[in-house]
Amino acid sequence: MVRGGTVLDQLGRRPADVVVTDGVVAAVGQGLQAPGGARILDAGGCLVSPGLVDLHTHLRQPGMEEAETVESGGRAAALGGYTAVVAMPNTDPPIDCASVVRDVLELAAASRWQVFPAGAITRERAGERLAPMAEMAALGVRLFTDDGAGVQDSRLMRRALEYASGLGVTLAQHCEEAGLAAGGHLHEGAWSSRLGIPGTPAEAEELMLARDLTLSRLTGAPMHFLHLSTAGSVALVRSAKAAGLAVTAEAAPHHFTLTSACAASYDPVFKVNPPLRDAPDVDAVKLGLADGTLDAIATDHAPHPQEAKELPFDQAPPGMLGLETALALALTELDLTVEEVLALLSWRPAGIAGLEGDHGGPVAEGRPANLCVIDPAATWVVEPDRLASRSRNTPYAGRRLTGRVRHTVVRGEPVVIDGEAQR
Ligand code: DOR
Image (spheres, rainbow, N blue to C red):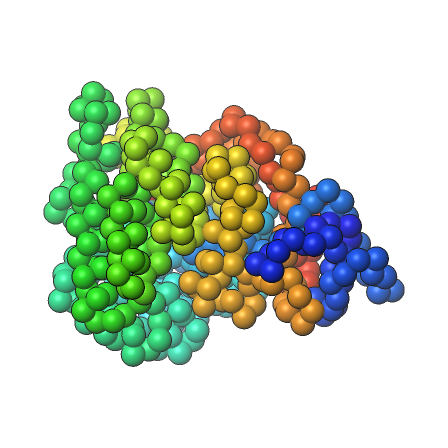
């Protein structure tokens, strides 16, 4: 039982206890009695929200277990308030057929975490031949992406959209026009010139986004756009939505909290793809999150081993950790209400991932008990060595944040209690 908190979901805010039995919410109301023997989680002064849902997590399994595993990434997610994560398919081997989907589902089933693999759009994520999306969809895969790379061939992308809409699944694009982006390691602009490191122009993202909006219109297929980072991208999605296209889009916390100036340190912890952009882009992403142009905050949690992130900037792999800091960054840095932040982190992404039956609330009798208890006033400092991820590549070391996850409940099981992951 979660006692003494304020329930906050898409239905609003109300002081209430939440009784959980057999993994399901049994009652929501004031002054409820705990069933005999029930564990009581104190939520005094806290918000009781539907668990967060991440549309964009790199769990690195199979194949890159030194960076992360389903187990370690799942624990990091739970500590961040997530009760479900969509695992990106750029593993080794990639998640591009039923047998690898099954492997990831088995790893998830053996853990306490709710992990939903995304499938690749093309075989080997090589952008040449379509992956067998039907056999992956039959195993429950709802999102498909070649994330880490965009599908370059427009004809193939059109066919992928037609195939996907027949299957009732959604394609999610990593928007990056490879020719224009080639050789870039940070955002092309004043800082790439000053530091002497080749950059990637904003237009490399915007070109593919504009193409895909056109293809979505041509095919009528819905699409989701991953980690949008530029003012131009936000404007493109805004006008596509105004024109009635069935598209959704996400932004990552680092794209509303950090700028290209971070690269001045030459520290590869600030290398990410798409790269950190300029202040006007950050402002546009924030506005997009505030006005509904961007539907979700997704972490793009991208763990990398320490030795890889100690290479020179132009040789280090792109990516940064995100799961354990996303909620606090959003609460601290965005000029939004807690309700608006939770919509972006929980119920809207649950809908995009097709998980609204089990995740993203509302907190109501009969619903699966996937919950997150948040202390909105608690402040804390990010300490890389205390993160649960196997990797340490957070760009927020030493940053003071407001808002902390106190408890996380997955299918009725308390997996985080008072900020500590349970074994
Ligand atoms: O920075 C990134 N890292 N962007 C991506 O698209 C892929 C990701 C990774 O897998 O490391």
